[in-house]
Every structure is written in structure tokens, then in C-alpha cells.
Length: 231
Image (cartoon, rainbow, N blue to C red; front, top):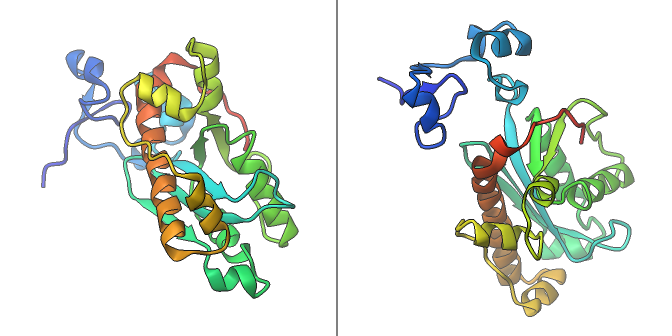
């Protein structure tokens, strides 16, 4: 079966039309074609984060508060770049039997470890410190410094765009990226106590944030230099 042609940076014509116009096309692109990142950069002129061995994902978590020691993770979602979304939710039973969010914190960390690069939106200020704090509290094995690199698109937007507000909602709406799902405060209140319908609404919101985050990345990543920064 013939695979969809991709450019030397592993993107389809939708995302890198310029490469296709210049004839910088490869029918297949596998990790075995390059010995390492340096070899990839030398042969393609691409960036280190485009190396096929550097798998990328988009992370978003939802909780009933902002501080890990006083709040509970309700849902999480991780979307593989150009791939599916994996997610998990807390159950009402866990909220009241003493286990609380230990299980979903563990499942989130284990899924995160499958990737070399994680993208978030203000993850440096919330998602990752929250997740790290929870993992340490529960004695879980959180990735060490340098194991996973982190792109925080909030700071990309802050430095490259002049908007009244820097929220994910604001930048995606301004750039015409659809999919944001605002939630009523009542949903968060009910979700805090494990209401199944509310939790599902929060999860849908969570998953959609990952999807629009990927769409935002695809729109703006060429505006910045992807510096290696550990999560």
C-alpha cells in the first residue's frame, strides 16, 4: 500500500506545503533512516524535535482546584501527535473510599513516559507541577530531569502574539481554531463530588483542549525555535 507522501520534516502537504513546492519530499520516513538527531538535522535541515525518534504528545489535565495539596485531579487527556487521544477519569467510588486520584495520577504519568516531547498550554505553571506534586505525594515514579522535553505554547503565544488575553480560548478563537468547549460552573461543582454526567462533560472538555492545542501547535511552531527544556 502506498503511504501518503510526506516532506523531509515528516509532515503532509497540509502542514508543510512549502516543502512540497520545493520538492523536499520523502515517500516514507522511519527512524532507521537516521542514526541520531544530529544525522537527521544534517541530512534534512530539520529541527531536533522533528527527528522521528522524538515522539510528541499534547497534555491537559482537569482538577477541582489549582493546588495539588488541596485539590483533586478529575480527568486527564494525552493526544499523540497525529494520533489518538488516551484519557482517564476519577470515579465517585475513588473520591470517597480514600484512594482519591492516585490511580489516575499513576495512569497519566505512565502514559506521559511513552513520549519524548510533551506540549501543553501553561503546563509549566499548572499541569506539570500539579502532576509532579501528586506523583511525589503518592510515591510514584515521575520522569527525572532531561527524560522528557517540554514545549509550553502559552509562552510561545505570549512572546509572539499581541492579544488582550493569552488564554488558550483567546488564541484559538482569534486564529479560527474551532473546538473549545466552555463549561458551566455547575458542571465543575457536580464533578467535584463525582457526578458521572459532569465528569464526562469535563472529560470531553479535556479532550477537546488537547485537540485544539495540537491544531495551535501546527499553526505556530515555525514562529519559534524549539529549545530543549525539560518538563
